Amino acid sequence: MSVLLDYIIEKFSKRMLKKNKNVGTTPTSPSFKKTAVENFILAKKAYARTLKNNLSKLINGEINKSDFLSVQRTTINTAYQAAYLAGKTYTQSTETTLGDDERRSLVYHTTQEMKFLEKFADDVINNGGKMPYNRRLQMYVDGLNAVFMYGRVAYLDSNVYINWELGETDKHCIDCLTYAVKSPYQKNTLPTVPKAGKSACLSNCLCYLTYTTGTVDDSFINFIMKKYNGNGEIPTENDVKTLSAISDSFYLWRGKYEIEKTQESKNLANEYRRAYSDHIKTNKLAINKTLPVANYINEIKKFNKKFKYVQDSNFEVGEVICRFNGNKQEYCKVKEINGNHITITNIHGVAVVVNITDTILFRLLKEK
Image (tube, rainbow, N blue to C red; front, side, top):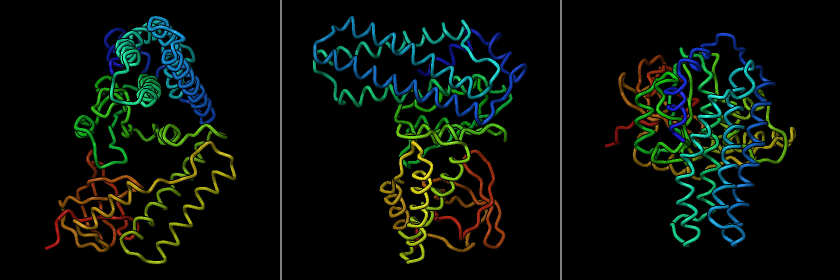
C-alpha cells in the first residue's frame, strides 16, 4: 500500500500536484467532511464483509484459489476507489470523482496487493501460516484507512507541512520512530501514511498525521477511525471535540489516582468516565463507550516506579521529561520555566505551555 503515493507522484506529478495547490478547489465544510467520512465507513464495512465472506468460501471449498483471487481483486479495487475518493473529498469539495490517472494508480496498487493475497490463499489451502486467518484478513481491512489518507494527503496544498505523530504506545517500531524524528514532510516527501504497511508494525500502526497549517486538522477523522463501532450516528466535529476533551480529563485524573491514591482524583476520573458514556448514549453515537485503561495504567505504574513524578517546577532548562497527555505518552524537552507553567518542546520542536498541576510529568532522572 505504501507504493500508492509514490506511484501517483512519479507518474502524474505534473498534472496532479499542480492542481492540488488549492488552485480551483474549495476546502470542505463540516457537513461535507461528515458525508465523506460516512462514505468511507460504508465502504469499509462492505469491504470487511465481502473479504470475510470470500475467505469463508475458500476455507469451506466453495470456491477454488483462482476464483478467490478473482473476487478479492474486484473487492479490493472497488474498496480502494471508494476510500481514496472519500479522502479526496474530505480535503476539498470541488473535484468529487476520480480522474483516469487516479483509477489507473489504484488498479496498479490492487495488483501489488494481490501478490500478498496469493500467498495468503496458498496458506489457507495448505493450512499454513502462523497468524489466525480472520486476524490476518483484518489487517487488509484496517489498511483501507491508509488509502483514505492517501486521498486526503494528495489534495492538500503542497505548502502544508506534515508531522508523523507517534501513537498511544511506548513500544514504537523503529520505522515509526524514524518517520517521527525526520518530520516535518511535505506531501511529495512523506514516506508513507499510518497503517499502509511500510512500517514494521504494518496495519497495526497507532500513529497519525498532524499538520503545521492551522486550518488543516485531522482530529475528527482520526477519532472516527479509532473509535467508530458501527452502531448509531457518526459524531459531528463538535461531538469529537467534546468527547476528546472529556477523554483527556478522564485519563489525567485516572493517572493521578494511580499515583496519588486520593479520593478526589478517583471521583473526578469516575465523573469524566460517566460524562463520556452519557454523551455517547444521549446522542446515540456509533462510538465505543469504554475508555481503555489497562495499557495506560501499566505505563503509569512503570514510570512511577522508575522515575520521579513531579508536581512542582523543579526542572532544569534543557532537561528531557516524559508527559502523559491524555492516554498518549510524549517525550519533551524543558524550554522555559515560569512558576507552575513550563514551556516544553516535543519531538518536532513544537512548543507548548503546560500547567504542572494539570498534567502528569516524570523526570527521567532516577531517584537516588
